[in-house]
Length: 78
Image 1 (cartoon, rainbow, N blue to C red):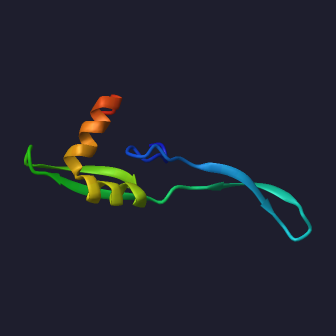
Image 2 (image 1 turned 60 degrees about the horizontal axis):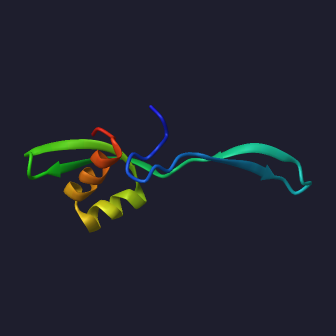
Image 3 (image 1 turned 30 degrees about the vertical axis):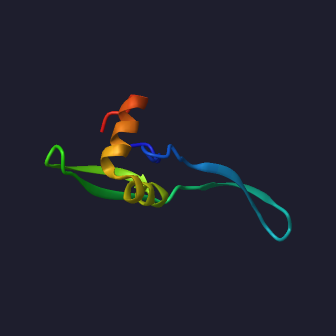
């Protein structure tokens, strides 16, 4: 399973860790992914999604139905 949020599309970023001696080594910044269950009242069912903390705030603001509608437009099946 990819480390990618299905709502925001955020994924890992890459860069360098820079030591005091200015030695560069590769590193990754991973998104703050959480496994969260949401209840869809229109369908009367629960869905489990892997989303970032930012996406959880977006779902709280807009509502799960509106977010799922946007995902359906993009062609992402949940």
